[in-house]
Image (tube, rainbow, N blue to C red; front, side):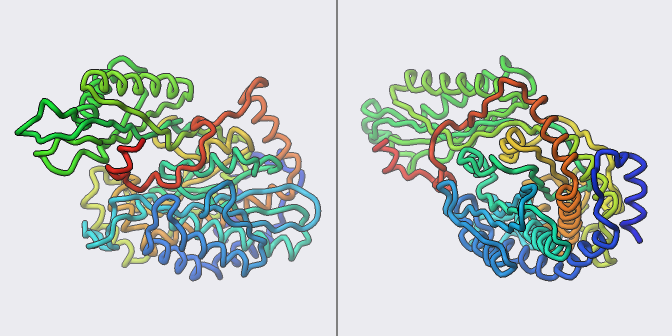
Length: 490
């Protein structure tokens, strides 16, 4: 049996001394079989959410679908938590014991509409796509939670299982508001996963970030007849962008600064009285992020002075860097090794071969069958609001091969694969791994205690959680453009 073979390998690599109890093999097999049985529903759910492609804080149908499935399976669901209409917490409790949380995401990215063709083929009239595979994320997390609940009932396991429906991971920092609302205060451990192009568990640090919108306000005028009477808000944005680009030489080299201009005027012969740019600042060190963000803000203020305009800004997101649990990583790695990687059909391999031709980096397709047993990964890369949870509760996650090897996240290739059976197979691996890991933790109080001690030591005795986005309410409109008329009143 593939699971048993992988289990023996993982046990040799990572001794079982950390476990007070171990889930019996028959129960593990039942959990895996339960998810296999549920995999058609997982696939249908993922495909439906993929088709909707709802962006952050607008995932009304996607959130409702996952909530409905959890309610049907016997969970108690509280919707609209922490001031976010599309967030929810689903609970199943059986006696007193550990509280294990599983995260579910379901937001899409703007501007990545793509069919499931292995060549670049946009979808007319569609404005977003699942370029990070969150359609798979939410579906697999729910399937995993249902399987864990069934195991708990069948084996009279004591404790509470929760699913956190967390919207707007892509820039909206939805989980930060869940943390700030105290919804993880009594949780023993949190599990999550993410689509990718390989299978592995990582304890590397992600990047902390602050994101926000800078708005400039000027005076309209005829650009040819009376330009001297105008003050261009667009000039303010462009001068700010130039200043920030010069700033890049004088910040820590690992810092990332990105921006887009989201509003720039309507007609060349009208001096624009409103313009807006959307900025991200990232670094693995949250203190550096805050420092550089202050300098970006000063650049905006200087640009306003230089152009005779005024400016204000709104922080729309902010997250910590990841503080993953190495203690939990050993448990999850053991289970991922046991589950194993994906097996593609000839048709899936042919599809992947065609798509691979469009990738700048081409890796062996057979690598999706393997599991990277290393627990440590490189620092840097992207950002995630899971990080804020990891500073408050022992947290661990995995990546699985839902995309063609070499596929970058936030690409049309990722969108295409996330809507296919290739994506679903990777999601099933994730669901099994999380379910088995949760089962281990429910029966391993010693492991949970070690994970808690590790977290307290890693973050330091003086640590007090303060959200990088401050005390603001959820930025429910962050994916909607700021109309020029609204900009005038700010």
